[in-house]
Image (cartoon, rainbow, N blue to C red; front, side, top):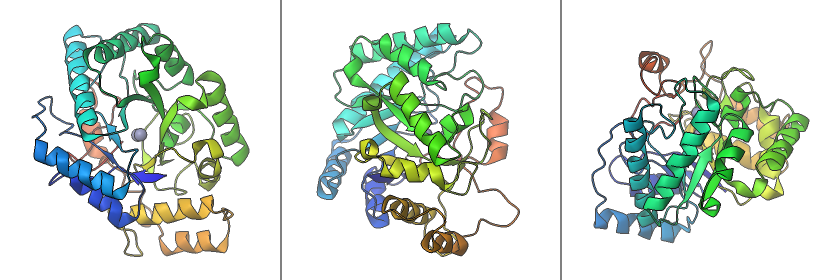
Length: 337
Ligand SMILES: [Zn+2]
Ligand SMILES: [Zn+2]
């Protein structure tokens, strides 16, 4: 099941309509402006429209991503409280919209240390779950381990889940670019199998509710989060081939968070990345003529890296701010990290 993070500009249902036109099976959205704390209430008409289109399209595993402002492990108690409130509101919005899973990065311990951060994160998640009966799954995303962020080791997520009072309401979202940057080797089919086995051993593959399929501009263990188009980064096609053919991962929403815009062949990059994934799933070898021609028709602009979102200067400008280590999207509703 494939999806992409798409914009809700102009109405939440717009993301669904764009996913439909791209031939996707699902979509990931923000349910609010992710760069502001203030969350205006959802309007019933908008909720109804979103649900109608989701129903029409048979999208039963829509994913949402939480705001980048949220830090459930923050050193600062006020920020932590604010984050709990915001995530609770987001979870309730997702529930109203019929969204399957809400992905959260968990947060950054801000220098307090990982053990303290993990304890705080679990406490915050318990507080959120106590405040709402929302049915939407709260999904902990594997991170790249930028700055002081948590959940870049499978063990972190295991320990957080172990401290959750209602563990059935919590799941995991694996982001390929993030785990690779965090040090999990996805460079070959064999190493990718080993990483999936390790995930299964440490967390349990049954906990996986969604995946983010992104290649990585940055090398293994760089701890830097920069997404690249499928097969155009440091991960390459082998890992994606293993993932899309894996029987246990078949039914999971696999979301592209790669740069949008148009590819050289005139189609949206999402369409090109989707075609690549489907070819791999159907059994095409990574060096097959079909795949080679698709790559050949869509060279990356010469000498430059993928136009990753967000723009590098924007990410730089945010450095040093609270919650640094999180990339900040260039747009309100479009790009994803
Ligand atoms: Zn992600
Ligand atoms: Zn990312």
